[in-house]
Image: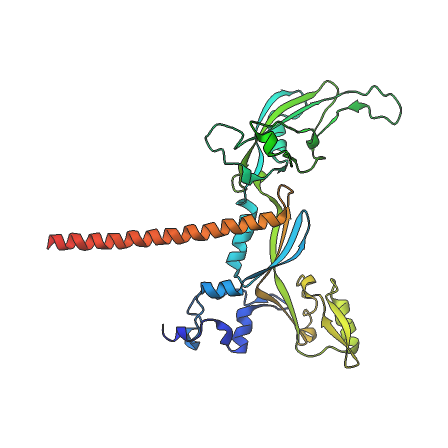
Length: 368
């Protein structure tokens, strides 16, 4: 234990071990050194402690937002290990709550779509409503604090306009824009600034023909994606490791042009270095690690392709139910609460174990 405390972090590792600790090498045939060394004593023989230090983690972790639109967010998380990054991704997929249609009361349905299929299609329509303003219904009665109500009424008739370019039917396409919010209790005042609505107005629900009609009432409830995918707030949530491209030796002249032509994503540029055209990795973030630049042995001797083990590039695309930056903040909140719950569970378990030991000691003393 004393030798492990000599150095807190593996920054003092020899260069060859430091490279394996910090990077995943992408060779021409397969990646190498893919496993993260999690064991605290993996470098104990060198007097280096690889255990997690919370204060150091707080100092090293950073989040850099690279782009943000109404539907998509790209950001970097630096200084964490893959298990934490994957936990954040999974939380984004299935544990950030949203509002979705849970119950459909079919009053009339003379279309060719079965009631259960119609209800399923309605349930998958993303709803724009702030879930933080609602409670989970559970087994309680539906009310304005846990339920949103929408009505849909559609009927198809023959078009009275007989011109050649006119549509033959009126109301033949039932769209999500026809879902009308019906406020319950004091919801009208509370949501006056931004009434609940479907995210997209052009989602096709059904097709009708003259004489067919649909009338349904839909109840939205708060839930999470691990219960049903309709509550998942993201279309995609993924991450990749930051590519790292280094040169073992300068690549000049015709070789520089050849290397630039090898890359299908235009990662390399040619710059004038001391009057000599030299290849440089100008856009490493664009690299998809196709390994064209290291596939041939001659290029593998000149170029090294790696990924930075603790630098994650996240891409989050929202369904539109909530802005992507809000989703990330909520996911981080869920992750934080999980950590606090785990810490409390460990504390309670330890207290119970200590109590059992004390009780066993008391019983033993009484027997004597």
